Amino acid sequence: MARAARAAGRDPEGVRLVAVSKTQPWANIEPVLAAGQTTFGENRVQEAMERWTPHRAGLTLHLIGPLQTNKAREAVAFFDVIETLDRPKLARVLAEEIQRAGKSPRLYVQVNTGEEPQKAGVIPAEADAFIAACRDDYGLQPEGLMCIPPSDEEPAMHFALLAKIAARNGLERLSMGMSDDFETAIRFGATSVRVGSALFGARVPKA
Ligand SMILES: *Cc1c(COP(=O)(O)O)cnc(C)c1O
Image (cartoon, rainbow, N blue to C red):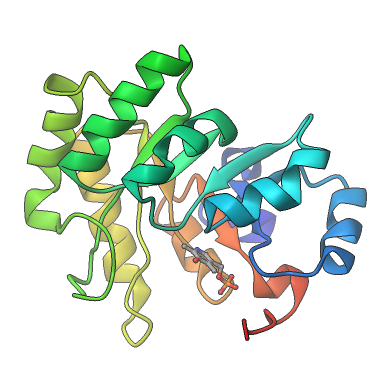
């Protein structure tokens, strides 16, 4: 990451590592914690709470998987960053839960840059209007954007598109890049990369 940042003329401090610990056994996570990593990403609310509640102090936890509205209350209470805000109904429920809790996680809007039907995220053509609605209709203050490019396409064009949408909407955070493409993402302005298997080894498939 540091090498990629320097090669792009960027300060390595400007890119955060979100260690994606989903489905990893604790034995794989412990050495990463012991090495001083404090920011982790999980894709399921319940699984994250079970795993991290005993170790919660001092950590920064990102929700990087789709959020159902019936889990919004727990997600607001538990996570520091929710990266998957992607539809008006979720914006409305999150706004209510943030009000109720009296605290807000930082929010990123997920953009489905490849317009893949099976993927979550607002499509690029609707991103500006959705971000405006988050601000004007729901009183939310998203700080950034997140994307997961199609696995069979060159990711650079998706990262460039995400950066462009962020810039024109005044959003400073860009969550993009995973194990196979984080260096490219850093070149295109990622402020955080979400890396799982390159850190922890291949995930154990769920039975
Ligand atoms: C699993 C996951 C990652 C990590 O993927 P790797 O290829 O293992 O680095 C990153 N982002 C999201 C949204 C994920 O679900």
